[in-house]
Length: 314
Ligand SMILES: Cc1cc2nc3c(=O)[nH]c(=O)nc-3n(C[C@H](O)[C@H](O)[C@H](O)COP(=O)(O)OP(=O)(O)OC[C@H]3O[C@@H](n4cnc5c(N)ncnc54)[C@H](O)[C@@H]3O)c2cc1C
Image 1: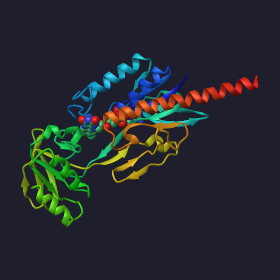
Image 2: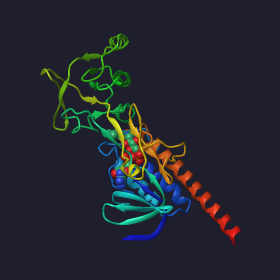
Image 3: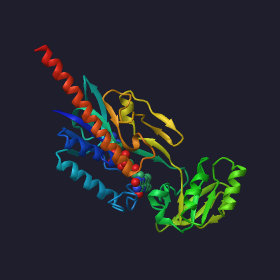
Image 4: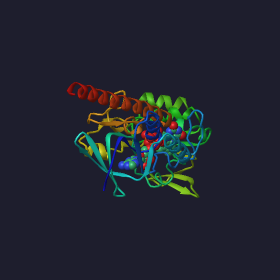
């Protein structure tokens, strides 16, 4: 059954971006609902790093604090998943997986992204603990350790350099990456980076840690952490249902917006990883807050325009 309440904004996704937007909108006395499926991208990580004031906080503790802060200003929180969004005149109707139907004047997509991992057995199991991608998120935690870089894209040498800043023991597994250039070889040699040619067959785990990187030819290498380059794929089902199309860059696919977060689909806005594949938690929260403000401004303008028209017609 569809509720009668017409929310000003329905926020799909309650991670850093969605919850920050909810706080901004609720503090502007907007009738806002957040629907969240409860799977933030960093769920596997032990802590959130590079977050001023809350350094190292557990990912789900951060979400719980954000929910409480938004609720404190009157935002409504629903633990559910949005299955479908349809345009309904000037508004939208959202259908939740649990069956409820909600109405809203605007949609804010803060659904984050999916990390498409290299198809190597063992990588998915250790993702977020010993298989890493970002030197700023978890590099300090593996400083000085033996770090392998799984080469799948031309950016692997760049990743080597970033992790070489954190450890003298870095090895590049060339796996499926393109041929190294002469400049690459010079750089890797100068920095004492071991280059291991050949395909990686498996990342073998033991007791939740890396036991060995195993090559196709059976050779084994002992490392503590493996860095990979996932393809970042925006969680965009709803955007596509509404006629939106994704943009691509070398990192993956995303929803293009203007500076404030407005998409090409009328009434639909986006914040966080769904629109900015490189945004960490602080940047996603900042975008949520700014887009919340811009959405409030958009609604204010619409209401003021309607009030002027009504006054002239009276
Ligand atoms: C392993 C790992 C470790 C990381 N560590 C750090 C770190 O230490 N510091 C840092 O700054 N960044 C870190 N990051 C990056 C960080 O996770 C992201 O920057 C951040 O989560 C982006 O916030 P977001 O709100 O855009 O998306 P998310 O946090 O992913 O939140 C999106 C939410 O939307 C929900 N959702 C999706 N679709 C729907 C739907 N249809 N209906 C309802 N809900 C939906 C999801 O369930 C999820 O709860 C890490 C990433 C990874 C992969």
